[in-house]
Length: 151
Image 1 (cartoon, rainbow, N blue to C red):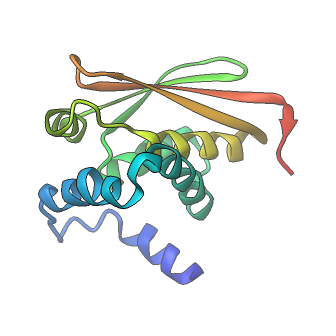
Image 2 (tube, rainbow, N blue to C red; image 1 turned 90 degrees about the vertical axis):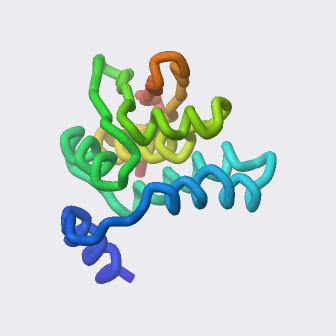
Image 3 (cartoon, rainbow, N blue to C red; image 1 turned 180 degrees about the horizontal axis):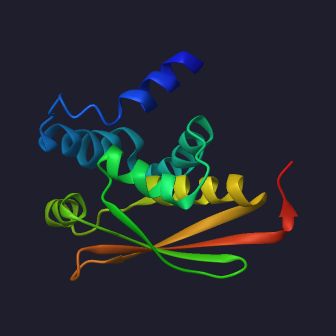
């Protein structure tokens, strides 16, 4: 399993294989929501956290690169203070997701961000998403619990 993860990370920038965005949209917007039903938001949030543990990244720059390589969009760190991190997700994929379903959610990304920042900073973290539909962007606020260090 470890070798599979490393192979995925090593090949993420391959660029030679082009996959239609339609396939990604079918899985993300239709199939997953149908399979998970009314619990899709919660399940995908925790799936994002689990994915972050499988692909630990060492810096915010690596998280930004991961989002780009995964086709999730362009992530930008807007502001960070002691225990809060504000990030913005934008780009063509985000625009397309809002066009397909104006009620789409970004809980997979939120969970991924929460866990990555938690692992990097050493404290438990949670993330909130705030879709900005008109601007076709998503704002994330990740909050660390400085009273709850991770083991």
